Image (tube, rainbow, N blue to C red; front, side):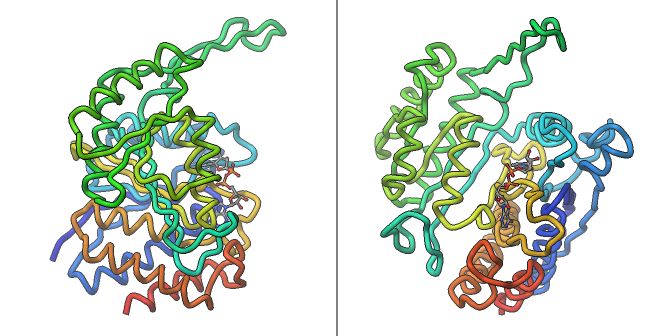
Amino acid sequence: MTEYNIAIIRGDGVGVEVVEEGLKVLQAIAKKYDITWNFTEFPWGSDYYFEHGCMMPDDALDTLATFDAIYLGAVGHPEIQDHITLNGLLLPIRRTFDQYVCERPSVLYPGITSPLRDKNAWDIDMVVIRENTEGEYANVGGFQYRGFPQEVGVQSAIFTRHGCERVITYAFELARKRNKKRHVTSVTKSNAQGYGMLVWDRAFAAVAERYPDIETRSLLVDAASMDFIRRPEAFDVVVASNLFGDILTDIAAIITGSMGLAPGGNIDPERRFPSMFEPVHGSAPDIMGQGIANPMAAILTAAMMLRHLGQEAAAEVVEQAVLSVIEADATLTPDLGGTSSTSHVGNAVVEALG
Ligand SMILES: NC(=O)c1ccc[n+]([C@@H]2O[C@H](COP(=O)([O-])OP(=O)(O)OC[C@H]3O[C@@H](n4cnc5c(N)ncnc54)[C@H](O)[C@@H]3O)[C@@H](O)[C@H]2O)c1
């Protein structure tokens, strides 16, 4: 019997709905693999903000530090500015727990029709590794003359050689471990951003030298965006800064079928702190409360958490269960052309666990 203490933050909107299904699947798989889950739910997010004026309490990070992992839905509310929800919860967790790798796989599964013409199952099979603690999302900047007509906002991007090298190293290690195309693409913009992005480029070149068995390419972010659409099959592992990785993974999600299929993990590879697992999508206010959000991204995210915890076989079974529900084409949410509800899809995945 292996016991895990998991912090659950459902968050907002569809985050609440999809986490419910992820938990269902985790409970079902636990029986088969002799796992005991100690789930502790934290009601943090936008409702908490309306009541307390903050997204989570002052001691939230100390509380979370004691867990083996964090499983999160999404945060974001139409009546709260997004920088408040992001800076009040997600970013402090990622930074404090040094979750410097944001790992986001994108695979075109059998049974999914890509919006891109002539793409078949498995044609797209890539992982974007997004730098997750610094870059353009570093909390460095300020206002001058705030609120006045002449107000000025300064937003600084921070690229440290250490921060770039460690996330790029993770990408190369992953290319080896995947053993597919054995290729790493670096996404840069050093033609226009000749300071921080040059540190990124130099770090990439230095790390690449240590991996002569891995092919490399460096692409400007504009060209990378084009190639994600034009020839996504060319990518294996992609490593990008915080902002570029954020944007590119939405493209990667939609060309492989839906935001509702894209899982993600915020990982501290050194395991000094809990890693946090959350789907790529946000709180989707346009469909919240309708019971039609696709829970597959959250379920595949739970599989990533299982793998991180060392439960490789259980992770594999969960992923295969999702794939079999997709292929059966009988229980899908509207984003994948079906008419099923969030909970029906969750139940179908539980059944498919066997
Ligand atoms: N990690 C996070 O918590 C996170 C990430 C992105 C956005 N957000 C926040 O979420 C809110 C909404 O942002 P947005 O609309 O730009 O992005 P979003 O990802 O919430 O939604 C984008 C589109 O994808 C669809 N979608 C998302 N998840 C889906 C699912 N599970 N099943 C089916 N369709 C799904 C939505 O209906 C919408 O059309 C904002 O407040 C934003 O700040 C949070």
